[in-house]
Length: 86
Image 1 (cartoon, rainbow, N blue to C red):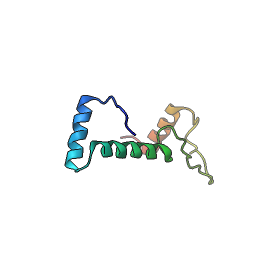
Image 2 (image 1 turned 120 degrees about the horizontal axis):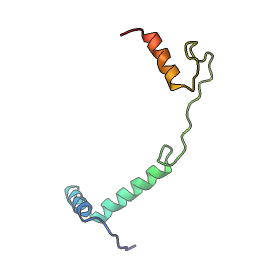
Image 3 (image 1 turned 30 degrees about the horizontal axis):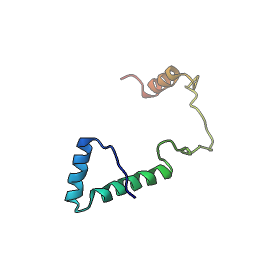
Image 4 (image 1 turned 60 degrees about the vertical axis):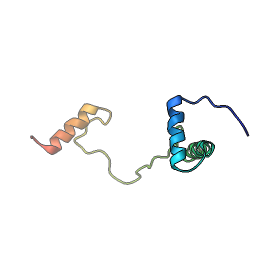
């Protein structure tokens, strides 16, 4: 199928140079790039797709020194207490 594309001049120049170095056509280079982009959009982990995060189901919990897990300051203070004076 024939189509017309509006491509940045510098990008087109680089694409033509790459196609020449790889002994392929500009059309083939564009097709490969478009196919790669479509494949990456369809695979998990692609931008915009949801990722399942692992959940720890073991025993334990917060260290007793952390008074409030929602407080950034409390966590940093607990770290300082464990590391001791520097």
